[in-house]
Image 1 (cartoon, rainbow, N blue to C red):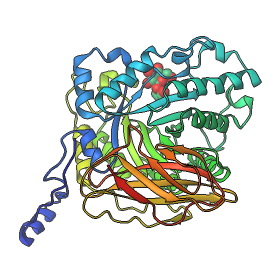
Image 2 (image 1 turned 45 degrees about the vertical axis):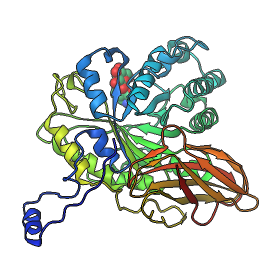
Image 3 (image 1 turned 90 degrees about the horizontal axis):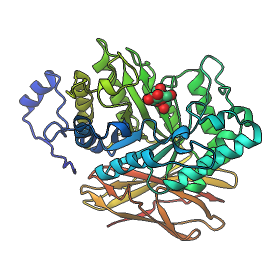
Image 4 (image 1 turned 30 degrees about the vertical axis):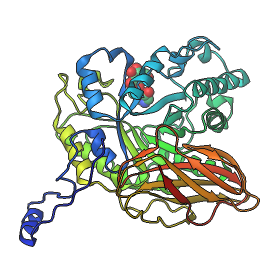
Length: 451
Ligand code: 9MR
């Protein structure tokens, strides 16, 4: 659904009284009436974790189809589900989630390739190089099965320890060597170059030792060219939101990764609607926060039994928290947030699209001998249906990987075409793709051709 921005002209007196009443006007004239459509106004998604076993429940799928434009399998793509015995893969339920997402035109987040929990028993009993090669094979096989279909993969889940140290969690995977995480990310990139690759964790929702440990890993990966595109913040919250929630997201964005709220749920209590709205506003205020996923649909679908932490009650009715999220999304209006995107070393200014069409801008994370470029493709005043970005790589530079686009050429004049899930951009919205290369990254503003 395309949301057309319409601005209301008010007399000064009316405007003053409206402002005095504290009513947010931007976007209310054409406010979108579902979570997905209202998030799409700023180029974001609003998703839910879903369970294959509930897809035959009409109330459940009715809400899912109506409200959400992204899905995450709650359990169906985990290691125990997809490789129940070594080398023997079962994608039945994972594919059901994928197909549900495809039928909705939704993004599909893959969750999760490697995790210390929910391992099949055969993997739990392995160690050392045998476990390492089984784990990397698992990443390769599953990411290959879903190649081209997944918007973002949680490649590694919950690998950092709780408490004050900021270090890794002990696990059988960690005991194969500290480089297991980067090995997993490299294998995932090789298997599905177009999926965004995320690290995902909990208790990282504010600035603390654990989130700082994850941030340091991201910076290290970026500096060494290990492919990582995004960090997921699970946000299983109690009755409050960390005061530095937004600034924590921003410091990851500033390190050159997208951020996503991946498993949001909030204990029911007096503050539930306020906390939900606060999380939503924080994401909207961080330009690299690409979307929000709630961990279930109705309270009765939640893993947090008895806490009623979701947006719909047991009967599927919208709760106050639902309304507060929808209002926060609509209050952001039909344009992208204006916060500065990243503090990457080199950023070309975005050329404002004139009328329809598209524009592109590049931010570079560069090191001696290589770089990662993130390219933002923005629609003008009309929705874009397909896009091609063209640029020239400097002499000595060659592409080594491309994600969320397909390239023609790998040195000199190169162009990048959208993939299936990011060709359509709402008016005023944007999407991003990226590439890694040798040598020095491209300078200047790339050309963008819509259609
Ligand atoms: O919601 C999931 C629940 O159905 C499973 O029993 C549980 C098993 O560990 O995993 C739950 O999902 C978790 C997610 O995969 C990772 N972050 C924490 C989530 C809640 O436990």
